[in-house]
Image 1 (cartoon, rainbow, N blue to C red):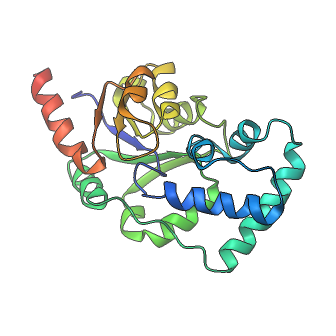
Image 2 (cartoon, helix red, strand yellow):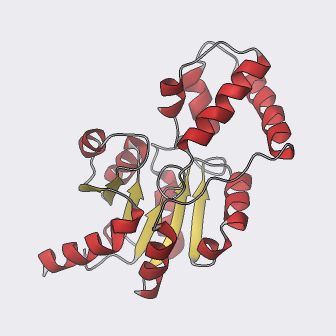
Length: 223
């Protein structure tokens, strides 16, 4: 663990407490657009994936292009009507700033679009100022494909063992495991700890607020 230089965080369900908001927004879209009904659980299950990948899984019987066009229009309307940004989890901002002061580089790997992440970072400006790099699902492959992690490593000139992926879903853990990167799960999001461990997490902590103490303890054990 003493080789880690880059900490890569997922956004929704890891840094931002957004799962309930995402489910509500999607259910509103489904109802308003007259789409076939889906359960809250089936929507929650797909949080963390890119929009296209999530829609393919949620509506495999529908044509993706037409469905994406409908939802893009709905999302623009929702934002224009004041759809707000989700808050960060308690202690997340302080923890990330503490990690930054310790010398770790901070990056984001998210299923959000680039436009969506930019909007979130404008809202959470205190967090944005310590982030050095990011990848979004609409500019590379969606999770669980590890391409976004590979690209971040290439940008930073690092090897997989020099980075740590921190996320709340099996998709985060699977993409880290695929390239030999350590994955650290957080239990505050959408997938339960046992599922994160099965997907390859080296450990599961309660929330991002606990990352500094976990890293410190891991470093002590390694020494």
